[in-house]
Length: 387
Image 1: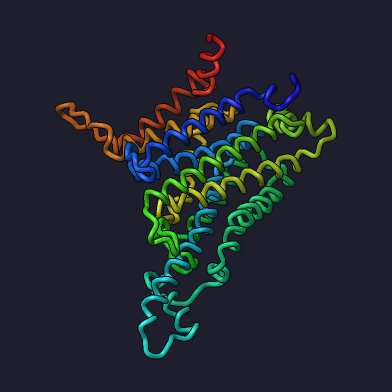
Image 2 (image 1 turned 90 degrees about the vertical axis):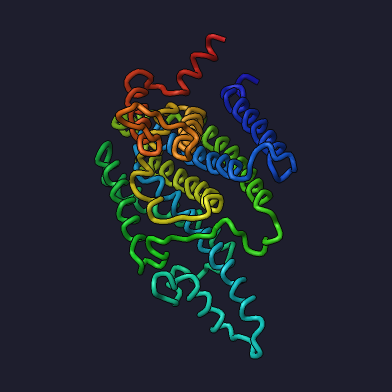
């Protein structure tokens, strides 16, 4: 019994129990069940927070356990959002166009329907033709496959090129940031095929579910996000507890020595980089239907920097630390930027938290780095030991 996975990792059981209790309480208190103690908008906020927790643990594995400071993982998150967003926007527009053309004396041809859908989606950028990347936008299962395949393939190709060249440290971080910036700049163009700066909108409206209330839809996404977080946590806990986990931590601590011992370091780093990119894509596919919109700004390098800050504040090298950091910063950000925090009138100047929140976040990151390098997770560890 002492050698079982749970016995070696009691925090996994505690985390799953806490997540299960939290999920049950939110479900019971939501408007979808009739209690109405938690608003639908806040259920969406909590669902999005769970998605951010999922990408945070992916970032923790690639950075905290393997030592690769990736400043591009939010790009994979955004790609997952775009992949599912294309189907959501296409299917929703198809229903609207079909209903509007249903009253015609002469039935519309498939080409006319396709042209009308294209005009509705791409009219905002002065086009009506479907780009090649929308070839499978009408297929839910293909777009779901792309949620996994595109982030995975991009990470595989990028990682193979970078790791085989033995790019490490700050140089690798700069490369991942450059990849993210290049992708964001491309998506900002109107001819990118993804509506440029306008992005994809109306993603919260699920096709064929007009009769289902937003409260129910929001709760369903919240439950799906909780399930994804639980499975993702289990997967990464199993990986980090295995022999593979020991090797990637050794790579983090002394890459040259691990290579000297005969391990193919590049293969291990490539596996970790790719699997975490796939999980980031899945998290994004769950996040953006709850957000309702996605645009290239979501993929900008600053988003990946925020992700690194969340993990640092939570405590890298601890999966639950990444969750704590992402949840803490995300909810605090919503409170400060959503008008929850009262402005402070100093007489000569009024502190408006919408403007000063990022300064506070940056200051928190500096203080944690200097005085609590193990983050919130480290403080949690101390409390557990004392008890």
